[in-house]
Length: 174
Image (tube, rainbow, N blue to C red; front, side):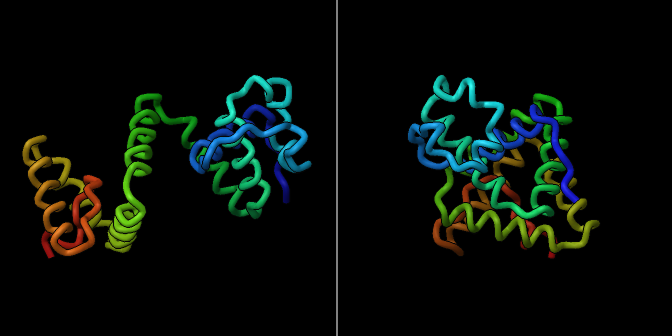
């Protein structure tokens, strides 16, 4: 069953998708957009020529991705977007900064970080809570030293480590 979205929410959702999946920017003429992209981006039509090439490119890419998503994927994205909207602005800013830090990593570092996150998610919930709590309870200096030790261990055992500042959950207390 297709659930219609309010236009402003839908447009913001596409804009968020575009930001997350941004590619190389180039100006996009409105007439060059597919019919589906134009439908998805209809709330931007009047202001399209006033948008920067980067904004146009991001929006076009986001609309294309949205159009290619299945019903379940769209439902999941809508739910994440609702959660995003309900977050306090400070938390959203923190998450955007973390995302930008992640994007600044090399592809190998991003892959390594994704693998470690997957390993962490496979731990039992109680173990995840325990590791998070141990990390939170460190002083800033202890946390910095622990992260540096982890980076050094990763650098010795991998192709350069992630340097991403995540605790190595496989080595703590096993």
